[in-house]
Length: 240
Image 1 (cartoon, rainbow, N blue to C red):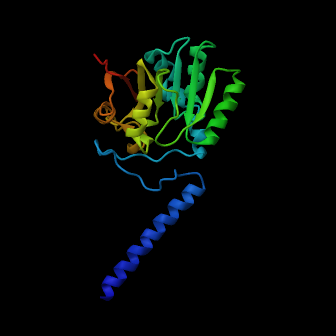
Image 2: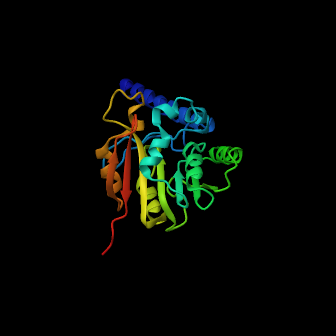
Image 3: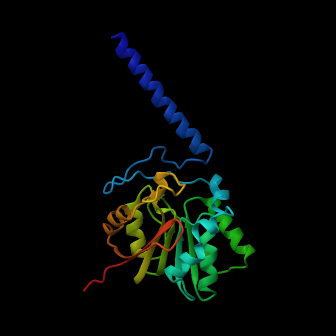
């Protein structure tokens, strides 16, 4: 009986410690409101925590251009003048600004994030570049809040793996795409252990295909031309 009580008290202290650590992380803006990670129900993939506003400097690190080659990514995706595109999980606007320059004044970029501080940075960075075709939108963890049927391309750059409700997000993004629109994911290659990124922030081709196609998309192409990332291009199946 004494051993059972000791074990119970020890377990209770462990739970209290974890809850306190999670609460401190949320208050500090380091962790998302969901203190515990979960797994995707189809692939079993561990869902990564959302990067807080404190990680903004990492998003704008000088090495990122060399590590990710964003211009080559946009070339492969085919971002052109006049397009209406969305950068979901825009962060500080690293990809948003590049797409805004490509689509030009006749096009538009919707920069979506769930953190107001990130969107403030996007607006500030867009103003510095004198870009007037960027609109920020505060979404939720289950809805990007994009207008229905208007997007030529929705880009998820190094962010899908952090979605706490990926199935709902994919369903809403599918609704936001034009019939000919494309959903594009950039994800660090889990198949390559030499890439210095934590495993939960990488994805394999198999994981992405299982999860995204289950929500009504078709994997049209996987491109491996980038230094460290897969490029996944999904379309909406044609209904006959």
